[in-house]
Amino acid sequence: MTARQDQTTDPELLEALLQARRGTAFFARKLNELSDEDLDGPSLLPGWNRRHVTAHIGYNARAIARLIEWAATGTETPMYASPEARDHEISFGATLPPIALRYLFDHSAVHLNVEWRDLPAQAWHHQVKTAQGRVVPATETVWMRTREVWTHAIDLDNGAAFSDIPAPVLERLLTDITTAWHTRGTDTGLLINVTGPDLTFGDTTAQNPTLITGTLPGITQWATGRGTRGVTATHNGTPLDETPAAPKWI
Image 1 (cartoon, rainbow, N blue to C red):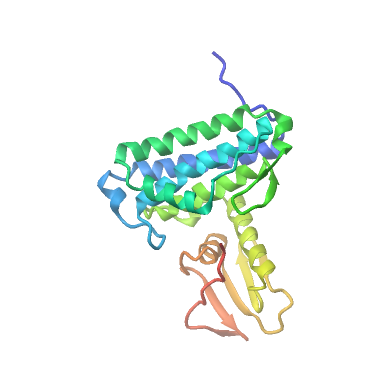
Image 2: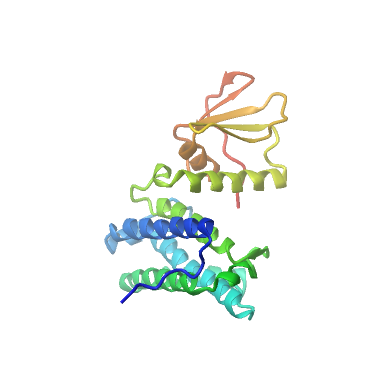
């Protein structure tokens, strides 16, 4: 029997779907390396253990699948009933027995993948609304999922690092973050220099900026608030003893 294929033939969208699926597989590998007892251990996110991270990723897949259903049918199906409902869902999921928590992740990931695969090509351009109220085409759901699975695989604190994330994902994530800073005006006086590839973000008009320098994985780790390893900071050409914390992202 021939395997069913994505209905879209858009090469950019197919590449984006590939990155999302690879990220899901990476999260699955890091999760499966953990014992049931390990799930009770802390994650890299304050106030969340590994159970919370796993529950979040599982319910996130279900929420994004609702958006794909919206795009397919035209019937509005929001990601979550409310922010409180989302938080309650994650808190509840974190209390599930390990076998049920793992099933939640596995089943929701398969469900979302099937929804993506079976979405007619033209429906990918239909508009849906994110949990933050942004109106976006259904294609945006692929990136929404991509950044979740890759970054939260690291938050499981099981050996994953930003250097494991593909460069195109890191670059788009860093672009998203710095764009959010600029929109809020929180990047004033902050210039970011990424080495290899050479990229520049932040306040390029500042006369005496604080210059943050590092590799793409290192800078992205810093920008997401997950550490400053391999990142340096200078001001007026003078090295700073400590790299300042990045502005708030979300």
